[in-house]
Length: 161
Image 1 (cartoon, rainbow, N blue to C red):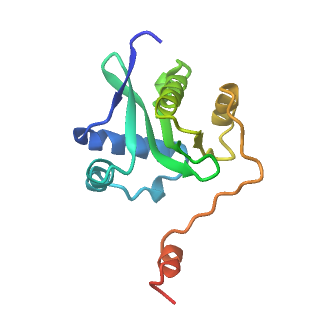
Image 2 (cartoon, rainbow, N blue to C red):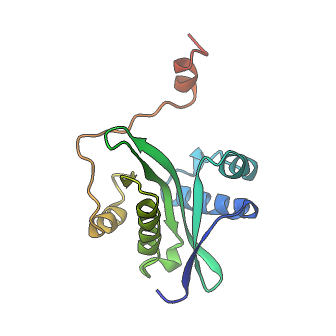
């Protein structure tokens, strides 16, 4: 797509990253679950380097973002890329921006010699599921995501009995 470029987020982008996270949470009907703030994003993204953010920029305006990090496949013996978040502003959807972000990250994975590139999608999000299927992505049937958070995480870590 003409006029579309991708750029890595910088420390100064933390407010913008948070705006995209909040917009995604609103879209996913999960706004109440966002506890991230600019200071936490700066610490975890830039001080600790736990994840990376790429912006899709059209005509000088950030119109989409992807947040990803590396995971590891013991079976493949290689790192992979896990896409945590992908979001394109509503008025820019259907213009190839999401596809561009996926292709960009697939190229990163290939360049880095990663064994896979994966993500999760909410079961109700038919438009995203159709988009991912159109790219050749396959659902991981037979796998369920489990999560420890809050009190359950505290208890599992031995903090509560």
